[in-house]
Image (cartoon, rainbow, N blue to C red; front, side, top):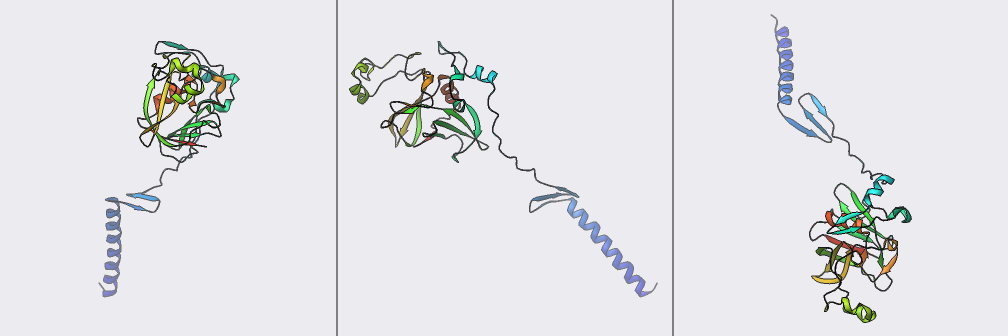
Length: 243
């Protein structure tokens, strides 16, 4: 066999063996290159990022259940005539507009919305009634304490403005829980800097107040909505109230 032929065969053998070795090496490991992942001879593209989509607006049948009568804690909470409320204040899941971390409560006072930020870029949104001008609170705090069917104890400053509330004062033990109690079915107590701000997120028997500025500073929700929020809010949840 000529030297030229031997060199040609040797070169072809080397190329063939190199290709086999490369394929064997590739089949035995996983490498990542940019946005692609190569496994064996198969190129796997990453799953596309799914755009966050809000839940569709609740249907009339869903609203009838959401805001229907509820038996809770020995009390029968009446149905809310939701058709008489602005639909934007219905409880619903939306794309999170706040940028806060999941578990945070954000109150958008001008829009009369409360958001509970959820994982995945969404938030539960509730309509709220807010404090009258001069009594509204804003800032960063924490939900330090939570209570089912709380007693209402108006602060002494309120009693001084409205002496008829003296029978419900802190000294007199407050108002008994119930459907007429201004705090409704649930109360979430806002603390800031380790101190009670005296402001609450609470239930509300007066559905007409949602979307309005009527309370003495506290943030009120429909009883059906405060129950839903109460069950979702983590312990010591941060809260941001924006004016």
